[in-house]
Image (cartoon, rainbow, N blue to C red; front, top):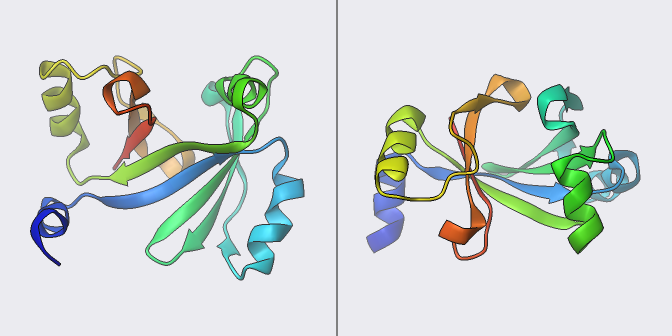
Length: 140
C-alpha cells in the first residue's frame, strides 16, 4: 500500500464494520445469507435499545441494527431517513488514548465515555458534525 494506507495499517486502525439500520433483521437477513455471508448470533444490547446481527465480509463485517424500542436511536434514524447505512466503525488497538486525543482536540463526541456493546467490545461514536456528516464508531 502507499501513503495513507500504510499509515492506517501501521497505526492499527482498520475498517471493523458498516452498521445498517433495518426495521427487522429477520426480513433483511436472508439477502445477506444468499450473498454467502456467514452470520453470527443475534444479540440484544439493552442500553442501546437495539438487536444486532453481524455478517463476516472479508476482513470486515456488516452489522444489521434493529430497534427494540420505538424511541431508540435506530428507530428514530429509520423514521427520519429510512433503512440504510447508519455508521462506519473503525477498529483501533488503543481506544482510551484515541478518545482522550479526540476530546482534547475539540472533536465532538456522541458521549462523554467509552461504552461496552455487542460482543463485549468497547466503543464510542464521533458525532457526524465533526466527521463530514458521517457517524463514525471507534471500537476496540
